[in-house]
Image 1 (cartoon, helix red, strand yellow):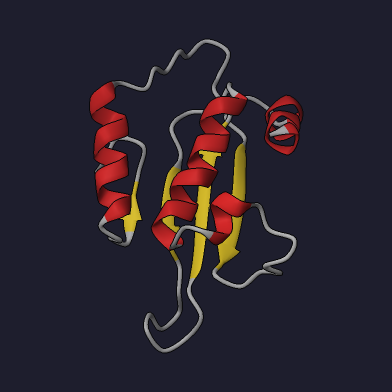
Image 2 (cartoon, one colour):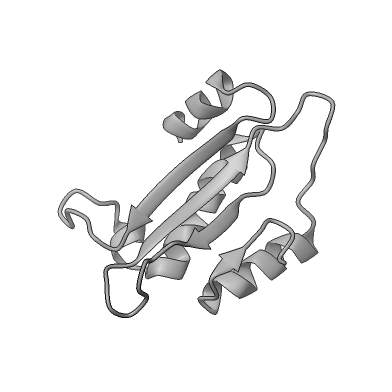
Length: 114
């Protein structure tokens, strides 16, 4: 969480924070929620870090795997630092839509569930 809060602190308003990950890791060093969940859940976890760090617009999750099913998967979750004059709230509908799409493993999802 400290890393996400620091990203939010140092970014300019509207600045983009990007987190990328694959399904490869050192299992003995990863947190248990990471090792006990799958790729869609990992995107949800990273999105939750952006949310709970505060000061970010709703995140976007993207599957950037070059050849899905034939190569290691690669994912990106990013979010923009809120502009100081913009207030964004996460409605129940937005969170539900984002969660539903991610849990079904679709490719591109934005914070509005589109």
